[in-house]
Amino acid sequence: MEYEPVIGLEVHAELLTNSKMFCSCPVVDSTQAAPNIAVCPVCAGMPGVLPVVNQKAVEYAMRVALALECKIAHLSLFDRKNYFYPDLPKGYQISQFEYPLAQHGRLVIHTSNGEKVVRILRTHLEEDAGKLTHVQKDGQSYSLVDLNRAGVALLEIVSEPDMRSAEEARAYAETLRSIIRYLGVNSGDMSKGVIRFEANVSVREAGSEILNPRVEIKNLNSFRALERAVLYQIDLQTEKMKRGEAVVQETVGWDEAREVTFSQRSKEEAHDYRYFPEPDLPPLVIESEWIERVAAGLPELPAAKADRFKQEYQLNANIALQLVEERSTADFYEAVLKADPSLSPKTAAGWVTGELFGWMNQTGECCEELRISPADLAKLLGMIQQNEINQTTAKSVLVDMLQTGKSAQELVATKGLKQISNAEDIAVLVREALEANPKEMSAYLEGKETLSNWFFGQVMRAAHGKANPQVVRAELEQQLNSRKENS
Image 1 (tube, rainbow, N blue to C red):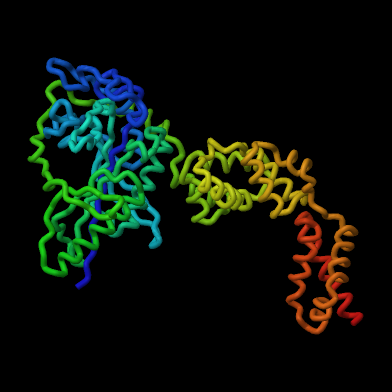
Image 2: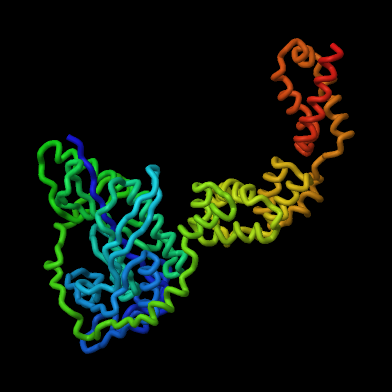
C-alpha cells in the first residue's frame, strides 16, 4: 500500500508597525527590551477599555493579500477567540474568523520537481499573545510572563492542504518569507519569533481524496525545524497506518534537540474557541480606492523579478532565483551592472552567487553589512575584463576588500598584483620553465602531452599567479610545438 502526506501551513507574521494592533503601545523587541515596559490597560485586558484598529496594520495586511493574489473583502469582522493561557491577559484573542480580511489566493513555489501552485485559503488580522519564560530554580518550576508582545499586530496566512512533501512545505515557507520581506511588512527574523510556522500534517492512501485526522505542529521558527518536524510526522503517521492504528488529531510541539514531536493537547476545533463577534469594534470597511492605492504601491516581487532577470540578463532560472531571494541581494546585483554597464551580467551574477554568497555564509553578513559597495565590486570585475588582474588574483583581492573595505585599485597597487600580460615577459617565463625541467620536457617530447598542463602550472607559480593565463597558454603551446618540431 502506498501512502501520501497532506500538508497545510499556517504562518503567523508580526507586522512592522510602530504601535500595537489595537492600542498606542509601542512595539519593542521582545528579545531585547526589559519585560512589561510596553503594556497599557488595552493590551493588558483591563475592564472598560476600548480597542482601536491600527490603520497601518490593515494596509500592511492588504499588501500581503494582494501579493498573494487574494480577494480583499470590502467588509470584514473581528471576533473574540476565547481560550485561557497565562500569556493571554484578556482570556481571549481578538482575531477574524467567519469574515476574514482576504481569501482565495495562490503562491507559486519551486521544488526539485518543478513549479507548483499552493492555494491560499485566507489571510486575516489578529493580535499576538505575550511571552512565557519557563524557569527551574531551587527545585521549583515556575513561569514568568512578559506582555510586551501582547497585542502586537499579527497577520495569519492559511494555505489549503496542497503540499505533498516536506520539501514543498519548506519551499512554501521560504517563498512566503521572501515576499513579506520584499513588501517591507515583516523583518523575517525567525530567531526573534516575528514569523512562525505551524504545519498541519496527515497521511492517506495514495490517490485518495479523503482528509484523515491531522496533527498540528506548533511554533516552528526555522526552515530546518519545519522540514524535520514534517518529515518526522509523515514517517510516524505512515507507520501507524501500516500497523492499522488510528492517528489521533492533536497539537504537538517540536523537540529540536531530540528531533521528535511531543504531544501538547488535543487539537481544538472552531467551536472549542467559542468565537463570537468583537462587540467593541465596528466592521472593518475597505473601499475600492484604498485597495487600488495599496496595489499601485507594491514593489516588483521575487517571481516577477526572477522572470525579468532571466529575460533581461539571460540568466538561468536557478541563478535568477538565488539572486532574487533577498531584495537587498537583487538590488546589489543590479547596482553592480549599473556601475559598469560593460560588464557581463552572467559574470557579475556568478561572482555575487559564488564569491559573495560564500563570504556571507561564512561570516553571517548580509548585503547591507558588506564593507564594499556594488561600485567596488564592479571596479574589481572591470579590472579582470581589462586584463589588469586574473581571476585567481581577483578572488584573493575580493577577500581583502571584504575584510578591510579598501578598493581593488589600492590593494592591487600596494601589493604589486597587477597582471603580467607583456608577451616578451611571458615568453621568458615559459622558456625558463621548460629549460628548468629537462626530465619532464623529454617525457613530453616522447608523447606524454598531458605534461603541458604541468608546465602551465610551473609558469604560473614562477609568476606568483599574476601572469595572464590566456597569454601563457598561447606562448606555451607555441614553444612546445617548436621544440617538438626540432626534436
